[in-house]
Image (tube, rainbow, N blue to C red; front, side, top):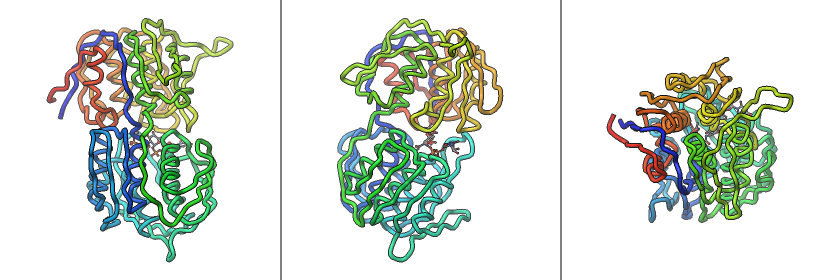
Length: 429
Ligand SMILES: CC(=O)N[C@H]1[C@@H](OP(=O)(O)OP(=O)(O)OC[C@H]2O[C@@H](n3ccc(=O)[nH]c3=O)[C@H](O)[C@@H]2O)O[C@H](CO)[C@@H](O)[C@@H]1O
Ligand SMILES: C=C(OP(=O)(O)O)C(=O)O
């Protein structure tokens, strides 16, 4: 086990290149199962979650080469089983992303319960409903067993009961390898869902409506290999913006997709942090900004709430809480998706933050408060980043334990923060 030891109070400044989007890389790796041809993925973040999925794919028989640190070449010509190993599945939530490809290409999938952060109950119903709509039978026991009908999955017109991100990705992957036109309505359309649809198009499908909540998938019997580059991680970019904001440093984040940052930048501006997009895709956070919460028209309390894309991402509510502790005024943070995600704020309170938890979904943050270093442990990936944000602006030394959770989604975060001036060490716990 490792921990981070951080000496706070140093402005983080310089230029940083965002890693590839974790939540895109995971389904894109799973797409390799859809074809016997080679798939080459660039800009794959080297994080614990992608390593876990690669182990799972290798166990199914996928060959994996890594010609460069962030390039992965996969070939699923010799997949020898469609039953996923339970120990590998429980390492990550995204293990369930192999269900759609296995079912579509091999006609069956046996899936143990997926793992992942304990941030609330996470339904699999949208995935299973999609598979049933495509004609599969689903048996739900200790494991979930799925079988395609004789002759393979059938195209359908399917309405999701909620715009589930991975549910949409599983539906897209299965439909792309199913001959005919499938329509997915009430679909999720996050940047990572868009990446999956674009990659499937490169593999031979024709998907219309990318970026909207209705997608028409013109699937084909046999998909081919392709080369694809994972988009930059908008959640990581926002995390860096907050790190700069709370320390007052000036940060240039290069290679961003401006469109993916629109809502994030708007919400951060509400929390007092301004940013500028340059023509070349650099997002600039100027140093020395005086953070002040913008109240709603009529002098009403400001609110930050998450929702399916293009609303503010659920994965950034913890980061917004940390940023708000340094902004003058009060703001209501309303996390609508996960009922356990906000409980980590007690760690920020122990560091001196003024936060009132109203109920499992809502917290009021009053700032600014001078935070002080503390010994805390990360309960999940984004709470871990929120604690890092708190630690870099706190007075004194902080220890963050269970950094494994942060390593799930942030590549070499300690090294990259050090390059921006942070005083951070990774040491055995
Ligand atoms: C690997 C991956 O991509 N993980 C992401 C994915 O998880 P994942 O695909 O598992 O998340 P889902 O989109 O299925 O839903 C997440 C939670 O939000 C709830 N929900 C969803 C839609 C909705 O309109 N209302 C609602 O309340 C669901 O009931 C569930 O409890 O999307 C989540 C929501 O953006 C992110 O937090 C995760 O980081
Ligand atoms: C909750 C997250 O990831 P996962 O769905 O993989 O648990 C996240 O990225 O914040």
